[in-house]
Amino acid sequence: MTKQVETKDNYLKKEVEDEAIDKGPIFGCRHVQALLLFCGITVELMTRLSLSLSIVAMTKQTSENHNIPTYDWKDSNLIISSFYWGYLVFQLLAGQLSKNYGSRWILFGAMGINSFATIAIPMAAHYFGSEGVMAFRILQGLSQGGIFPTCYNMLGRWAPKNERARIITFVYSGMSLGTIVCFPITGIISASYLGWPASFYLFGGLGFVWSVVWIWFGHNSPASHPSITPEEKRYIEVSLNQEMEIEVIPTPWKQIFTSVPFWACAVPTICSGYGVTFLQNEIPTYLENVLKYDISSSGYLTAMTVGVSFLFSYIYGLLSDFLIERNYLSRTHTRKFFEGLATYGSAIALITLGFLDESNAALAVFMFTLTNFFLAGIMFGHAINIIDISPRFSGIVLGFANSTSCLAALSAPLSVQYIVTDLTNVTLWRWVFILAALTLAVPATFFEIFASADRQWWDDGAEKLETVKTVEGNIKKISKHSLKA
Image (cartoon, rainbow, N blue to C red; front, side, top):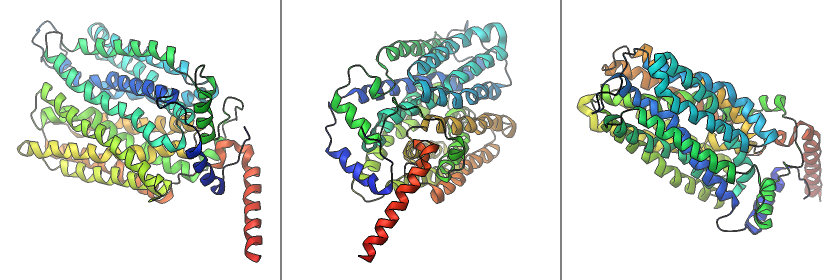
């Protein structure tokens, strides 16, 4: 296959070629990989978030079985935040390793360690108290730090350009499904005779099952898949201009970090870590203490609001592809539209939430739902834009942004601990909601101004710069000659 340099002129040509080429089976190998990644992210979110609700049962008797232990811990938010101490460590390295060596074994090891740490939490609580739980939460974070960058690397190799929004929608809707399943199941188990430890055993066990299935059916790229059809393999590789298995290009660090489109993706990814983590981890506490819902009801309500995000992520994905394929909006303007919808809409809903108390409980739940309705669109803003600008280095780009984002995510539970000194005081919660809204809306404005959905020249390596300059120079000369003629 002849290597091409991507310019704006041949970009449209390649889009047409993607439509004409035989795409292979209706349910092909790329769809199998997407299904595996979807299930993996679903399990990953279950293991990450189960503590956010079970911590209530760990510190207050909720089970009908009074032999289930409870603990007098005053550092619940510190325990929750400890996950992010480990989470920020491995992401950039995982992105680099997956680019050079593939994602298959990294994902297998990351999920296996994560599952072990999840199952070990009840034992750690019994023998070592909150410090033991924090130690295994750090291990969870360390292992999960390798999951998202390697998934992005996989999608950069497997998701054809014209199917990118649909495939990524499906894969990352596992985040919503994991939340939807995790919270009600954790609430039911914590209130049952089995008690809160059973939720950790269940979700950790599912992680081990996924690891076995993944190592059997997961593959790094179309080129390494033993049974992919030639038609599907060619379709993917032509769409992505892909020769990744033949040529390992050094990471162009300088060019990445001096790229404005890179920072347009990175800044909202980094800053939104606060708002997203706040919604994932602190809402059960808010529902119980301010709106006065019990643990089972909190689980169901959280799942219901996130269910809206799960549903609309598919609707937004179809709408995104529709706008691009029908040329109603360019790819860049489509990304900016969904970024604005997601961040500005959810920011308004969050600020409104800060002014509602127990007497407006139904309205508060509606505003939570509205927040998730808007926030579902973020996947088609800065999140998917990372793969637009750099399918080859997407794992590394996300690894940097996500690891830095952990600092913002780490501050979410800590801000609740230090700002909301009285968990029943809605005025104190108001400041946290406003802070979450600002961390979503302000960085989005930077994205709206500077983002681009064009594949960047450095995605073919720094050494391609001279080639790109030559091609662009020739295009200008041809254009001038045509005008004179």
